[in-house]
Length: 335
Image 1 (spheres, rainbow, N blue to C red):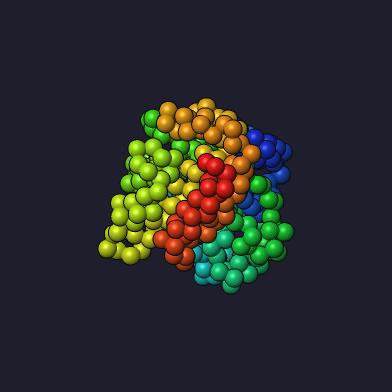
Image 2 (image 1 turned 120 degrees about the vertical axis):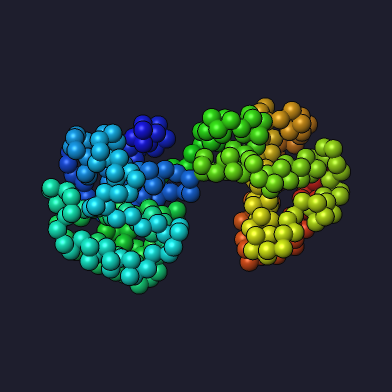
């Protein structure tokens, strides 16, 4: 159940929602913020269910007919907009206001709820319209907004909401979720260094980009293939050459993100003397045990390069720059 998962992974958020529902003090506007992959959407649906739940006993039971209909989006007094599918427009917000200007369709107490997922995708005009609605929502209307990037919302919107920050899943939680999906432990450990959304674990694991990133990591560590040839092999064998330009760009971004996350994970494991991961990976970590201090600089370099990965930068040039910066680091530290 959602509430059980929330209690485990987001105890502060769970307690805040549980207290608000138990005391019947649900504010008219909520903003759930936090990194991609945190259960903001699930929490939004849980709160919506709690408003409408037939049992009216704190957090939703998640089992009654009303809760089930809220969860599948078929309840008449619930509106859900998902900004990840289409940017929220002013017309979308105005349509909600128009719908909620009328009496409730189903809820006997007149409660109505709207959920705006990825509210940060809304245009400025949409946010201004949203702000007006938050200030004058009408009776028994609850707004629940979620965002991966709170900085993209107007400060005035944030100030009108009860803000609940979600903390990212720990690497251990991500690892456990990967194992539950049947991913082998050695791969799960590497994936936990990069993937932050448990729902993405299996698709990333099954993708060609993951396999290529692992091979690139092994080559950087001089396992099976010489590091000196990494740039050539990246260009010839690893990077996508799909005819569809946008698809190739997307694939290559994921490849470099995984590769650099694996490199940063390796640097952290050297510093912390971790003993997990595939045997070849663990052996490479152990071989650097006398270089722990130097690897703080390694992590800094990779982190700076990782931040430059986006669809606007030349990825081949970025890969070249990363390789040569790391070579300069290695040569300077006798690694």
